[in-house]
Image 1 (cartoon, rainbow, N blue to C red):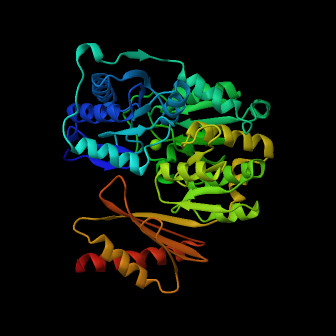
Image 2 (cartoon, rainbow, N blue to C red; image 1 turned 30 degrees about the vertical axis):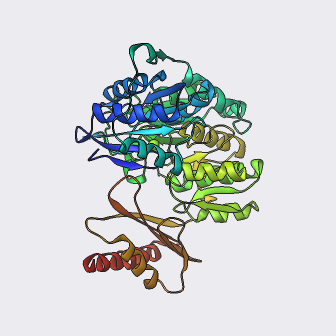
Image 3 (cartoon, rainbow, N blue to C red; image 1 turned 135 degrees about the horizontal axis):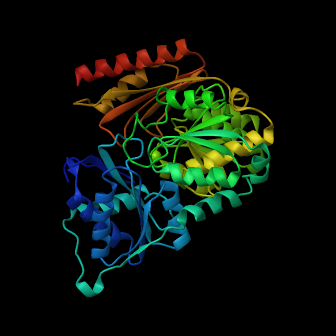
Length: 453
Ligand code: MG
């Protein structure tokens, strides 16, 4: 399976260059045999290749005797909710998330409605590497059933949460703009805002899969949303990624507050109600530590990857957490990242706290984060990490995931990407100059070590 990138929780690749119907059918069949017998939920985001991929995945599952519940276009959190609602043996979400339109991927869920864990992923990988799956005879095939009610059930779960105050939001009747980037989030976000009584306008709500911009909801991609927020005199703008598990916020002046702050505000507003500790990944903003300390809570940090956060949350009974890329997790609603829940929580915070979007964001201690990529081509990653550790004397060393070097005023984190052939370099500090200094120093070391390897 050349050209495919396997990670713990699935496989991704470029359509026609590694990711094709034959490969998808084989992976799906192995997955079905692994989680089955029983039912598997299949959903897809709006990518143009989604229909092909869903047909191939369905064929593979049915071929090994799995009954498929087909959701058609569905957000990733909706598929997660559906797996638990139906009592399915697993789920397959067809989405390459924030990656460009030529990519697609399988996100694989266990019967818990969360991504496969590292050991489950390794077991599936061994089956895939062992060769062709064993397909069943005509009288032992699975069947396919279509369900169209899961969006509403997902929204029922969100609105039934004690955290979401629909009445308060309805009284506030906020003006909201949502940028769905032609991903799958448009229709369900529209229904959510209807049910919450918000006055909503949309940018790129049609789920055509022809992304009008880079689909990652990071500040540099949210200019159009900012303009729309100002034009509509809206209270807040939301940007969903193509499969709607991540959400980023733009304030009433049209300024993106950043995905990291988007999560920090949710934690700041709801931690006092929920109590308990907070779980985030090692790359998430240090503002979370400040926020947690404010409410007397501890922060647990896991390796990057949603399932790592989810598993730790379930293990210690944490009630709120997530990933700094705009992924809010409240296990009582959904143990996976949920952009729709993020929207409902933000609107509740606005309604309850009587403060505007910018004012809520201003409560979060200000930091500057930089996220960079280093091409791996021929690089000795271990050598780079060793050299880095010695280039930052006096820094605390954290090897939870790659290498993180911390001081009281900032940190640098370098790790291999789970999804692309690159090293991710992240740094955060209290000022722009300080963070630039960290990045330049780390990059120099990496380039030098790269030249030597
Ligand atoms: Mg996503």
